[in-house]
Amino acid sequence: MLKKIHIISAATVGFLLTVLFLLALTLQLKVTGGVFESEAVDCSTGWLDEQGNETAVYGIPGPVGSTVVFSHALDGSMLGNKSLCFVSHNIVFSVYVDDMLIYDFYPELGGYYGKSYGNYIHMVELPEFSDTRTLSVKGTVLIVGGTTGFEYMTLQNSGEFIKELTRENMWKFSVCLLTFAFGAILFFFGLVENIRGGDAAETVYLGVITMMLSLWTNSSTLLLQIFTGNSATLRIIDYAVLCLLPIPVLIFVASFTKNRKNKLLHLFIALSTANFLCQFIGVPLGLFDYTDITFIDHIMLVLGLLLITYLIVKAIREKLIDRSQCSYLIGALGVIAFTGMTDMVRYYMGRSVDSYFVTRIGLVLFVAILTVYEFGQFVTGRMKLRENELMKRLAMEDTLTGLSNRTAFVFYEKDLQSRHEGKCLFIHLDINCLKKVNDTYGHAEGDKHIISAANVIKNSFGEYGRSFRVGGDEFFVVIEGKDCQENYARTLEKFKALQTEYNEREDPPVHLCIAHGTAEYDCSDGNPEEAEKLADSRMYEDKRSIKATEA
Image (cartoon, rainbow, N blue to C red; front, side):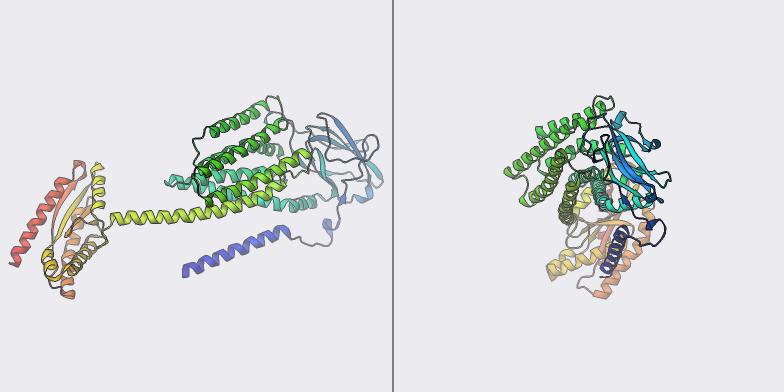
């Protein structure tokens, strides 16, 4: 009961801290005065092209390498301590006030970076002036796509811009971070279970899938760009995940549906690997950019989805999985497939910079379904493990006395034979007059006699040795170690005293008397049978001696 109270207390504290942390991420501190008092000025509209026509600065159609010029009238009285803050996407550029260059952005690309850097956060400090001047941006398009251009264009204090950008994207980043952490837990837990001899391969696959999905959907949250300052590397991760994602998904489904040897599976894994190698060899050589062959990744995802459907249907028809397991699998993969395909359609139809918005929602549902499934599997696995342990224990344990039985002794004997050094002492024990007890007073009294003998043996030798019941009235004790003779001497007086104490306390109709014999065994001999026979012979000598004394 006390343990449950402690668990509930700790869980309550953890839940409270989680809530407080989430509140810290979402609640805004109200401040009067200082830089916080200056409000942001929206500069996303009012831009003119070279012909003087109003134009949008986001979603530039291209073509690749084309030069674009945007201009905006800027009233110096609105500046104060504000900077020009924005996020650029797939474009290099320079910023001017009238004809004065105040900022330029030309990252070193090529190699694995490809032709673009993805997106980047900028805070451009503006010169002080009081009249109206022309703010202009001259850029070169790097890739063609719906996300080329400038977003979040505002005049704002740079610290406030970062804070608001962080707050706006924090929930997206939190989803990705939590799912990545969940995937990492699954991944490492599965590895540990497999190392320990368990069967947790599917848990490893699920962990990898979850981590990959969280990385993939995180690219548009901008938080990692703030933390790392290297959006080009994040872009590489994005495309690497897109290429490799089908592999762990299909391996998981194949394992789940008992289709590991399916030839189509191996062919698809080979194609996905070839696609990855093609991209990450061709891009550094300058043959193409990642965006040029994104359609291939999308085709592979669609083909992978069809193969997954085939494997599941095949498993159901052949009754390789039960319906409850199948419902979890179809539910989780169905959600992530539907949301992923939705975002893919949005990609080709033209969409905002957050191209993984729907997939991110699907990711939460995917993780929720898998959490329920994995928890159920964990509980079921633990129950089966306990059942196996119980069956193993029952197979190795004498049900009457609780000591290890003859089967356990046989395994122990084989272990001794496999050793090449060390020594131990064999003690063979036998209950005197057990047949007389059974014949005269019944088997219930005989069982009581056996249990009492087992308790005496266990309490006498248990501290130093291992006790076995190897027959109806026979027991065997093994004391290991170089001090086995000394330890035996320590226990012998207790062995005799416990028999006397039991007889005086219980006064059984036939007093308990246990004969015993010993023999030392050197493990380098490799054959314990001779020492066992010697202990057995000495036990019978002791038995005869006891009978002679009683006579």
